[in-house]
Image (cartoon, rainbow, N blue to C red; front, side):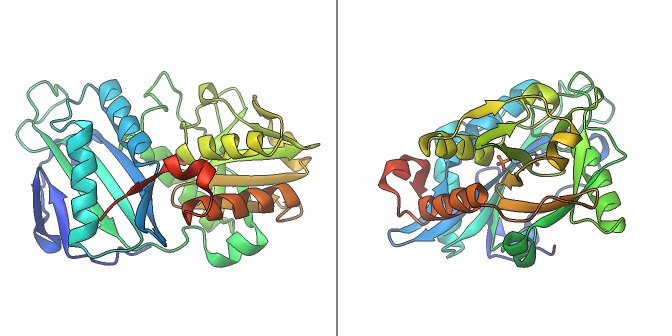
Length: 305
Ligand code: PMP
């Protein structure tokens, strides 16, 4: 997926032209993966551009940074204001926002205590991450030969750059094996998540998803889906799942900021059946929420730009 250029990037407190947002090749994060990141979507609504659960994303960035002992130079209010300024200065009505903070240039080696911290926010227009075809008819998943990183090797609860190597390996393997996306199991053999999405199973009307202790990121879309499903009257539970629970499920779907809610058609070539009624209902509801058409969930939308 190529990045369509926008006009400016927010970098360490300044808006700089897109092409000038550069760092040194000896930046610490480039060599050791010492950064944290966030992805937030901004939706076009009748009341203007709205960021979905922006404050929750910034709070997760703060928690990730704390886990890495990376001191964020900007507080929540500054990052929220900067996000809004960025959308306005780029004249975007809907976009993907990428927040990142990382150890920059100045020290080499693994001691980060003296390393400078760089903070950036970028915005660009982004379509559907897993493809329109997959959104409509369901994606294919393959169980990865790579295990989800152990939470005691590096915290899987942190959305940190280094650990994404795990996801990158799994995604590439899945695509080259003819699948749309990878399903990662943890060291104990339970389902963790996909390379960039949380996973849900529907069985007899219950909505089941692995707990974060299984190695899943605490997804903000997943949290929203759990709330919506409970509000629709479903039993919602975080439980350890085996891959066979997905083979036998009534419906399976994945969730993420970039992906949205996407139905799963098959896992390891076992047909699950594509978009089912619960998945469709949740998709419609989330679409209405992000379009600003559901007053009950208006508090999830922050005006930006
Ligand atoms: N798991 C991983 C590994 C991810 O990268 C993402 C995307 N941030 C998710 C789950 C979904 O999280 P969210 O809904 O907060 O985007």
